[in-house]
Length: 116
Length: 112
Image 1 (cartoon, chains in turn orange, cyan):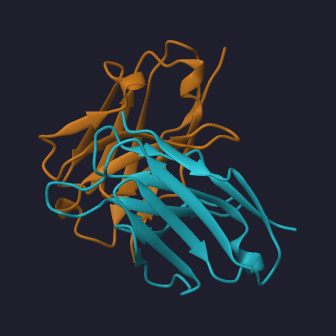
Image 2 (cartoon, rainbow over the protein chains, first blue to last red):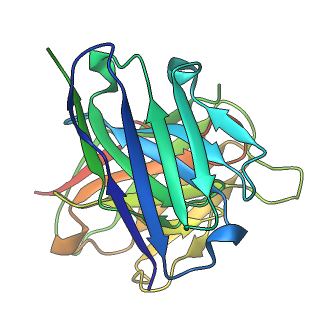
């Protein structure tokens, strides 16, 4: 059974940093692109970033370029999102997904709140 | 960026009646490998989204056959043949052909 467990969310002040992690199991992690998607409270879904199988290709939505970094540790079956210079508009539930063309599995999400 | 436009944004439906959601993309979604990466997700209240349909018309395992996807080019549709109470939620289309990936605004399905 595929499991994706996100962690690392919390309350942070504007300008601060957080590192989200996603522990993956139940599938061959090294064979799949991985993706982060976020959902602000009461809003729709927004794709944030994707990374290819060996980490050599990374793509970001414009609003996070230069502030967020997606990475993966294939030895530990984990996905990460380093978030710097956080803004109020980054407040959302962040989901970890398997795939990038038609993602098929979603985690339960981790809530990030950016507020003073 | 590819803009995904869903309609309607709100869809009240009578139990047992059909429902249809449109998703239009601002660019064609055929990828260089010949596939069209148009995906439909369902998000029930309080839950994470789950995939229903991938590559326009392929239903995921465990998804009832009352759900179907169709379309090509820039015009896509999700149909529910007979709406059941468990179908209440928000439905999103997403294109996985172009970077950045983009979602539709979501269509809220509710029971009349």
